[in-house]
Image (cartoon, rainbow, N blue to C red; front, side, top):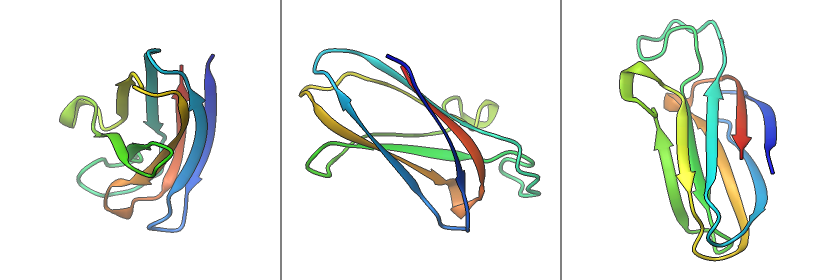
Length: 107
C-alpha cells in the first residue's frame, strides 16, 4: 500500500492531519517532503521545512521527526512499526509556523 497526500500549510500556524489504518508488525516508511515556497528565512530558504508527528488512536504521540538528515535535508522521514493495529493520525506542521506546499507519502 502506498498513499500520497499533497497539501498546503496556509496560513501561518496551520497544520494538516491524515488518518490511516496501520497493521501491527508491518513497517511503514513515511516521507514528508517540503516543496519550493519562496521563503527567505535562514533555516530553509526557498523550501518548506516540514515537521511530521504520528499519533495513535488514543491521541498519544508515538513518533515525530523534523529534519531527516539535519541541515543537509530539512524534510521529515520516519520508519514506523506499530505495536497495535488501528488508526494512526499523521500531523504535518511547518517549522516556526512556516507555510508552503508538501507531499506526504506513506508506504
